[in-house]
Length: 137
Image (tube, rainbow, N blue to C red; front, side):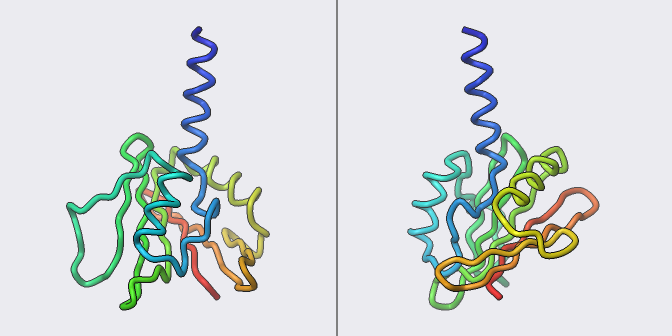
């Protein structure tokens, strides 16, 4: 029974550090983002508490593994940019996932193509956390 519980915990943890690329969120509206995130990363919950009025974005948090995803939205309510911020305890898992899912194109930079559009993924190491940014080229 302990073995099954441990396997379930490992699978849940693995899913919690998977990058957003399971789905491409750029170009989607808030309802589409919520639906896809719920199926791909259900541990993330919408956070309406600390909102910066200077930017239009959706903020999702995963308090278990200390991660935050910001979906920056256009005036037409479509996602233009994604920032995934995480605690350094998730760094090695994140790099492994990025290497597995994307083509390495430079130091801490990856690229991919989705529906004929090119995207760049960039990992930046900050003092207390790291950030993975997803942008359309």
